[in-house]
Image 1 (cartoon, rainbow, N blue to C red):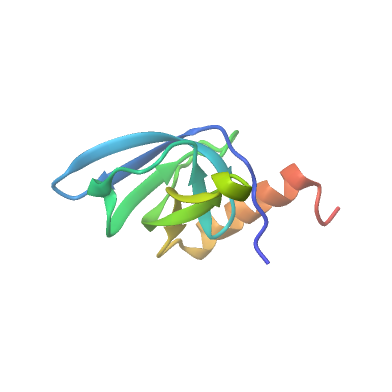
Image 2 (cartoon, rainbow, N blue to C red; image 1 turned 120 degrees about the horizontal axis):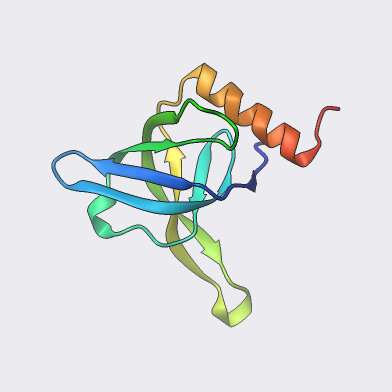
Length: 109
């Protein structure tokens, strides 16, 4: 099971030949980053993702793919493209994120 923890940092998103975008990261797990705002259609397919975990001078970077997140409740429930699932996050990056999540959530103390 992958836990999410709040994250409030800029996330850089790049699509080769189509420019770059910045979105505020809202939550992170070792499998994905959730963004505060919807991703544009231009970011379909593999994209480059980079962000800094708080207090970590080295960026986490990998390729990712936009995915939908169900938001709202009842009649207001709908899906929004605000998640970037990591495609090729290396073990070191995954461990750094997992350690950050575990520390923030107070797990494994």
